[in-house]
Length: 101
Image 1 (tube, helix red, strand yellow):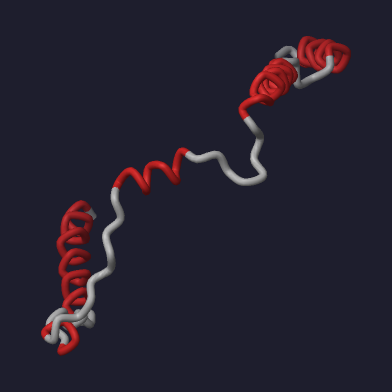
Image 2 (cartoon, rainbow, N blue to C red):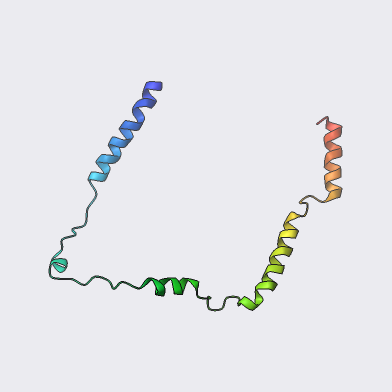
């Protein structure tokens, strides 16, 4: 049995290699590229980073940040509350004690 497991990995790699060799590889030396085909225009990095840090349309403004913070803190406090009501927890603990657990 251990010998079978030791052969599984090399056989799987060999099968994967055969499958990968059947893949179609695109021809990168196309006539359009040889004739001076156009490459996409490159963007300056300030433009790219400027777009990423710009506020989203319809998003919350920075003036509402304190309100959002207050909502998130209230939500976090609600998540810290017990999941099981105290009465139900007491009943469950009593049942466990009766069962010997």
